[in-house]
Image 1 (tube, rainbow, N blue to C red):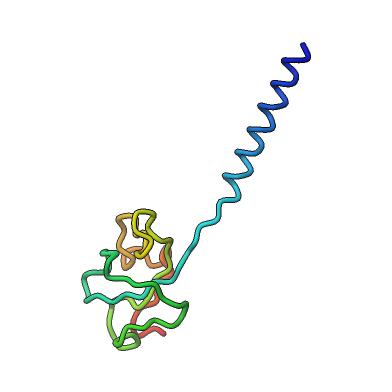
Image 2 (cartoon, one colour):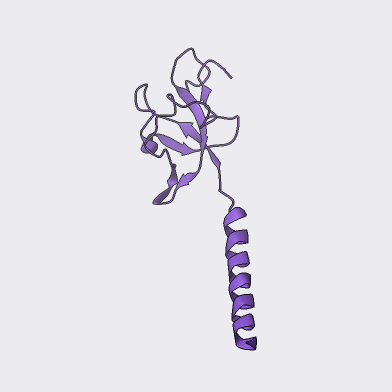
Length: 104
């Protein structure tokens, strides 16, 4: 009987460690400057790592419907690009915390 109790305690401890680790997962969210032409907002290679509120694109701030900057996690396969998850930031501005040209 004591062996079963020890095994149960070890199992409970391992479960607790795993559950705690998955709830404390922190994602590295970054700001990304859009450097492409209108219509290419869904292409991750059109973005470069930026600084919050300071997009570097020369036409940022001009009247246009395209993006200046988004907020997204880096792509696990290519951390130099945002992970767009197959989405277009223009279609889901809230999820990407989009800053449009002419709105900053």
